[in-house]
Amino acid sequence: MKNIVKKLFITLAWLLLIYTGFELGMWQLNKAQSLSASTAAQPDKPLIALSEVASAGLNMPIKAVNRIVSASGTYADKYIARDQKIADETLVALDVRILNLDTGYSVLVVRGVATEPLIDITQSVQVTGRLYPRQNVDRAFPKTGELSRIDPALVVSEQTPFLYDGYIVLRSESGSNTAIANFAPIASPQISQKISTFYWQHISYVVVWWFMAVLLLIAPLFPQFRAPKFSQVEQVKKPVKKQVKRQVKKQVKVRQRK
Image: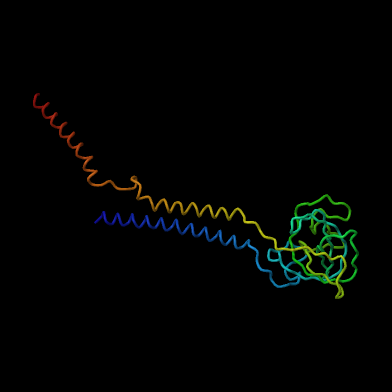
């Protein structure tokens, strides 16, 4: 009875360990899939005012990245940003301007490929475009009137102390219900986030846990994990018993002679 209970306990523990390894692997796999889904491109959400998804003078919230936004105001300073890579992997010079909004704040906008010299635009404009985070790496060595990267921190001044973080790549631009000259918009696809190292870390854990579960599953096939058969045990015991008997007989004979 005790042997049956012992075998039952060992079997249940063995099955429980296999199930635990499988479930831990599934847990890590689900986490990897969730992480992959969070970095995939999402359908564009409806057009929204810039002031409703971001605040001037503060870092851009994650929810504002890639949003299609609208704004209105008048252009102030204009710049050229050289060696900017666009969707087809070509390097171009971009027309970048400060848009002083009707709200009293400002934002950087990219009108498109620059046509030099840049024209002055004095009328009020209404714009829509995709919101991107600021660039952190210089693309070129700037001259006067140029930007090394598209970053609001480079254009902060007494006239424009509060700018929105990031910049808008325009899709449409109109002034007084008419189009403005030299407007050459560029493609503005969503920024796709690269799969982080945490994704591959989760995948490696999946491999480890499932490998452990498979090892436990096939463990009974190895001789080291199998109990020896009764006949084998008896075969080992018989020679030992014979040797003991022989030694006992020898000791008895020696005593009798004495």
